[in-house]
Each structure stands twice: as C-alpha cells, then as structure tokens.
Amino acid sequence: MANILINVTNGPEYKTKASIAFILVKIDINYDHSVAIFFAGYPVRSY
Image (cartoon, rainbow, N blue to C red; front, top):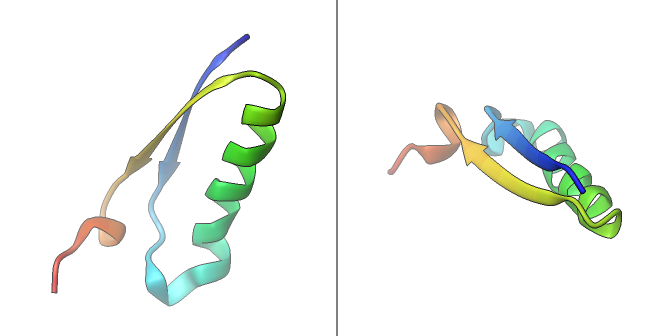
C-alpha cells in the first residue's frame, strides 16, 4: 500500500484536465492505496 498525493492545478476552464486527477484517485483507491488530493492555484479561487 502506497501513500499518494495528487496535486490539482487546473480549474473549471479545463474540465477534462481537472477530471484526470479524480480518475487517478479512483484507480489508486481500487488498488488499496492511500490517496490525498491537494488543490493549488486556480481551483481554490473564490468568486
């Protein structure tokens, strides 16, 4: 079992790129890895 950190730097303007992180999370969880997601930059802006 591995600990994995996924860094998301794409926001709503690039939905396909942003969704890749969530696909990777699902795959890693299926292999019983511990996963954390870190949102940096544009994905955490407030409007």
